[in-house]
Length: 359
Image (cartoon, rainbow, N blue to C red):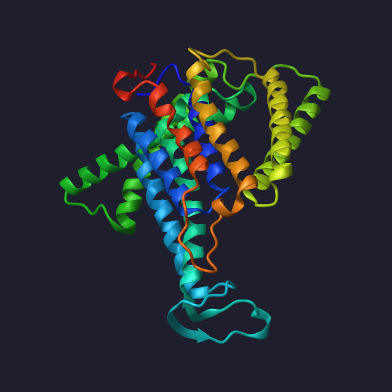
């Protein structure tokens, strides 16, 4: 069940804004606050649906990323100078062409702390994105795609619809083979179970294709060649601008050009999608409105991102604590207060018990 009055794109804008804001700092206290904010909102507003259970997987993925970053720091070392040696591993000599790479050797506390900061930043980004997967209905989000992408939306919706059926077929056939005393594991069992599953999937696909064709899916309108070329140019330019702007936002030195390039890319992409939608005119059944609560949810995430960008420019030392010399990080007050703005969706949206999934 999801909130019918809240557009699913608002959850994605909120979570992506939190993720972008988390990349502007390596302060572990602020990063832990980002994770806590996303976890609280998910716990308060996560619906009871199969797709909403993915947040735990993102938490485990973030922990795995953090552990892998620490292991890499131990095995490959780091050019950061350190004086607090924790352990000395056997060092493997490498050829001359591998200068700058070290296997083994001294493992210092400074190296581990820096690796922990970097790994926690990536883990916070993944967990914030995982919050959107647990809060936004994928089917409603795909239904909101512009007309130029409706073929993609239909394909993904069909895949999401058929995936549970395939899993249920596999479980049913394996249970039937076990009751008959036949093997359901190994290569032989896989082949004998897989063929009936593929046959059933093919039958459902043919029936669905016939139903979609009878309802007019795949019909396109006549569009002049100049409009098609303009659409392709705008869409390609916009996507390149989005990639370049996002790269600028995620790097330490690209904050000056990242925002304007990203905004220009988004504008060009939206214009291309609007022109592309003219070739596939269609209507939507019960479209999701973008109401005041959607503005509050997405605006709270944007406010957190803007505050962290300002804090990174005004006081970079507070957002990026040093490790040489090794000191304990401190919690900057007003950036921490800005992160707490991300809790707003937990109070302005409807609780899960009062939600109703649209039919």
